[in-house]
Length: 550
Ligand code: F6P
Image (cartoon, rainbow, N blue to C red; front, side, top):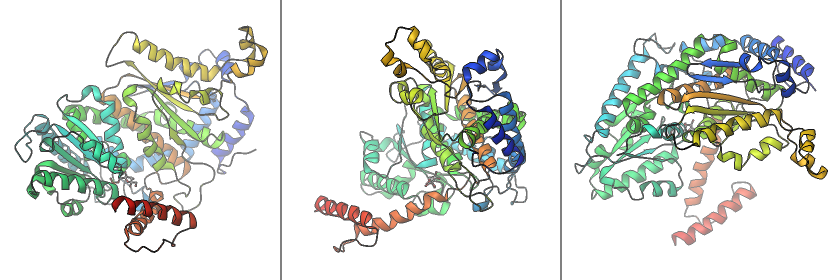
């Protein structure tokens, strides 16, 4: 069966190649070529990618790179870095790479007569650094004159996942005397728990919202503000010393009651899921300090430079991008597991879910036509070795093949006992077992009873990338995030979609607004305006709500 992919020379060559390749066998491929691992290992900045355990030959990779060339990844890359409005459905430039550009680099929104946005980026960074330093040094005083001990970031999606992920990833670099908490969910239990035990006199709230219209964030920020004012006996002026805002919407910030002197801005050319390295990273900067934050930005930049300059066949984001296309479009595999053998990267898969799935979960191309074939994968994962004791059974013996990215570092922060050896041994063991499995004959040779042989056989040929880095530092984290940003970009270009809008989140938001009004209406008449399922669910909740509120 021909996979359902576009009819262009490079696609057609790949389809033919996939058919010829048939059942690819990693054991045979490694046996036939002792140089396979070295030929398929590539460095980019401080990261090393070993993609030799993928179901590909050198020819596959050449054809995939030819596909990237045919899709004009290089032209699109130049357009992105050049500030062209590649986010066409929102008529916006996509310039998150300007957020980590050194001060002597000039970048501009192509529609904005060449004004250098990098100057604005550095102005905001300098202001952030000055404020973060005052907070860290105990010089920023709360309304009653006490220094800050707890920072609570209130935001959701891109205004939460990046700082949450990075604060955990860089835990080893965070200040001991500051407690950083995050509130995202409109479930009151999230805010309730975040406020548990905090001394409001020593708490700084950071309201992070690109649009400053997001229902969940405004509900949480409004409640936090009310609690603070109540704590200070109704004195509204306390807000100035306890609230910062991170946003592109100065009017919304002012309307909410936060002085715009306490606002750190960014721009509509920064997508929410690409905003960790903008003002949205303020809670992280306070936690790790401006110097470490700038080191992270330099890491982002190092990967940007690799993406810009390395030839496509040795370009990490391109290689990871085209491998994803191979599995999604040619082999029909729908998910990607990201499995960090770095516990501090526990939230990295969740971060990547938004980055990848909100960017490439699209079914209409930029030209308005439906896509042909599949687009973005379902991204999921948990740190190893924990995942091994949960879902790896399916990875090894399930009926679904799951391509996976394994991520490991050579140096731990806490060099405890033989822990790091055990951790890395597990990483290598898993990719080896997934690739080469265990044949029925090998199982039999161990004397296993015949009725158990099939149960104990491992099919192998389960594809993985191994990404190795020296140590999880701010610089390395920046590289890692930029690597995945650019991987997602490469795939979006090949699929012809806009990776930078997110219309798919809108319908639910609109319906939720309507439902809130219906749920809270005094009218006792039953709700009938929806389908029978939704009507009944709303009615059930309204009855419980009446009982709850009396
Ligand atoms: O609903 C999706 C979304 O728009 C994301 O793209 C964004 O990161 C998140 O909501 C939060 O948006 P904001 O930063 O504007 O509050």
